Image (cartoon, rainbow, N blue to C red; front, side):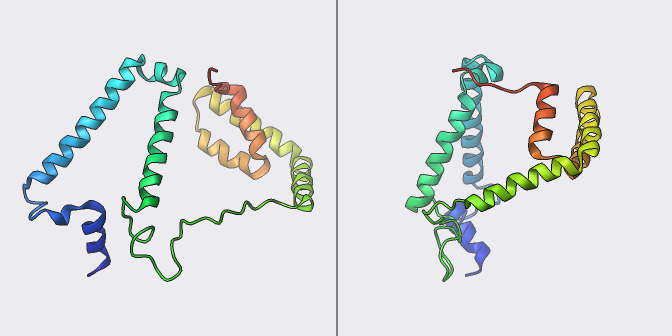
Length: 176
């Protein structure tokens, strides 16, 4: 059986229906289920005062985390078959299995990274200042921020770029 047919049969389940693509009830049923779930989620957002109200209570973040945890649990239990991840694996096994050992950098590697960052700041100081000023100006006036970001990335660290954008737009702090 070709690989694409395995995906259709095991992941989508459409092959369990006699005629899924020519007016069969299953497409309508799946569409209705998705629409119903989306409308229910919109209702839950509305109950929390809209998107901004839901953000204040961290609803979206917690919902995403809950769904992600549920999806991962189904995937690892094998109840949600995914080709090449937990079903029909190659001889090497699953590419998503991560070793339980946490890899830490050595003290020498940490010192090297700090020195490299200091060297970056020293070497490109004047260019970085100009690039960050341009980024600030573009972000504050609604200009092409992507172009300014690409230029700033040549001379600035991620921390410098992030701090400059925080100066323009502020930094989100969740309510405790």
